[in-house]
Figure 1: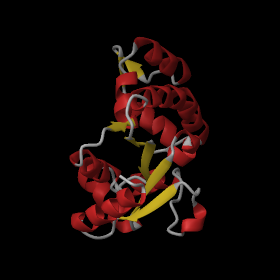
Figure 2 (figure 1 turned 90 degrees about the vertical axis):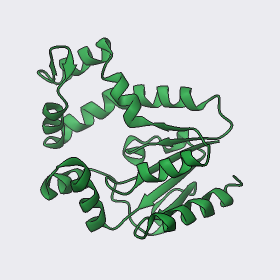
Figure 3 (figure 1 turned 60 degrees about the vertical axis):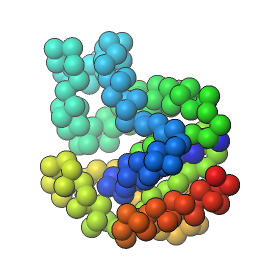
Length: 191
């Protein structure tokens, strides 16, 4: 069983994944796969061809690339079209040997890859709490975070907005509350 964990920026996906790991399940990360991909010469060459100047001294200038893609919708789509197939291929390969595996997939709905997973845990959190969480960990301004949120799937709180293989988990309370929601979700999956 392949289970994705998704949600908007600052929703608590990584926190939920850490709780899942603590229960002994394998958890893979699209962000970690992307970070590894960005060390590969052939991928960096493709990036530099699509986004001239984003590779400096053989390494990706993440800040430069972020400014390019978050300020230009077509550039963001081009980056996603270049990176998502590589990331998803590697992710599925890593998950394949496991009877049950989880994956943190930040852009699941945006990338159109929901069909690659048997189930999806969607972490939902109030916008204000999301902004606070991202500001605390990243140093981004509220305006920069708002721009990133505007480019993501809106993550509405009504169940009808999601495919049938999704379980919604609210993350507006304590860590203990999130643990209870996770356990309820795992129970519903027979895990």
